[in-house]
Length: 190
Image (cartoon, rainbow, N blue to C red; front, side, top):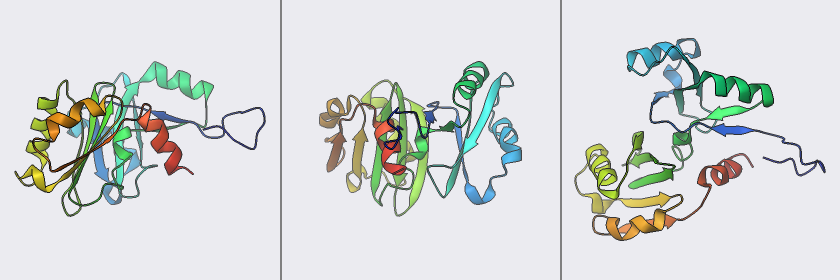
């Protein structure tokens, strides 16, 4: 984000999103930062040649643990030593109301948050078509009656999905925003 008080437009805060479907969410109360790699090992997600990252900067309840390419991470930290890495799954984790399914389209990945009465499921998945996304939603939702949920889809290409999902949900809200993650980070950090 640019610092508006600086006429040179130097970066005031730098957030680097790391979308990957190899992410583990843990309750903040149970998370021990010294055991981040152990959590990934236990979930069969650990790669020794990658850098393990974790944080909860976007959610007071959950911590995301994931890995990135070690060389790219090192290079980015040399360029921006104060950069904060985040996983996009945390963007709407705490902002999704009850009886809502939130979908963020992100370069071939889907960040999916399902709230029944409270948070029920949160996953980052690779989905290449609407049928695949519907399958994941129906497997993760606590009830088979999807019409009881409001579906919110955000990201580039969201409007293309609306006709398909209106067959299954009574309400489908579309937010056709390019760079949804950047806009959401900006709002969260204001």
